[in-house]
Image (tube, rainbow, N blue to C red):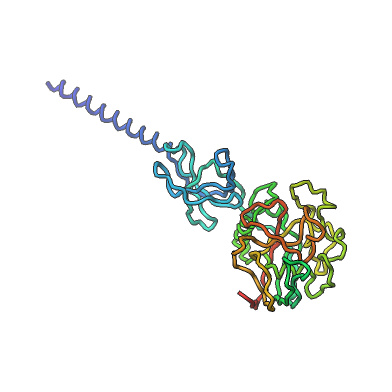
Length: 342
């Protein structure tokens, strides 16, 4: 009898050990399909086949059957990401948690939409100091640039050259990106300011025209630095423009009176302002924040432009989320004690 009981107890113990081993093995197997990592890594966003028709990537608030899209993110930005799960049973895709550069959780994104990149590096910008003053803005012979009116601007600094693809690459890690929208530029500025602890921004339209005309050193030229467009500008006639506006080497034409290059031609330049007709009254540091037109101002002409579009007064416009293939930008820094119109 004792032998039978002993054998029964031994059998039960073996079964218990076996079940525990199986349970532990099952947990290990389950955990292998849901893996989290503690360290975050830098990523840029990229399109893949499913979203190729869009210029942005969907971000989700949650996963699974009740998956809900929060918004779509521009592909022109840098984020932090953390690997979340390796095989989601609902979508059978790998997922990541996405964070802003300051660590704020944004949502979930497919790992197919991310591309690891190096930490963003702030490009060096050569700035030119522009002493403030009062000038006549506009051109009464151009309906879009009239009426001429008096404008005063405070001191500011403006980049000597248009931002180059190399500088964009240093910040975003996206080699070969040469075209960006006004919105994309705002992402660039946001990250640049975070890295440098400065407050870079786009120039206002008034600041742009004042600097293009040469500021206090202005000689009244038609174009920025000359009355001859070919001396200071790359435009349609001398740039072999074939429909894809690419930047010609910056600084390869003559500068204007302030030593600033390519304010006529090369790339159209984004300004901060919304497009609107000019007021008749004198203005101090004006900027148009009224979006009734739905357009942002672009200035200076580009490699696709006619000579008259490269003058210091000609005004262009573009939709801010449209990637304009002939547009670029330069940046501005405020100087202390700035006042003006809101």
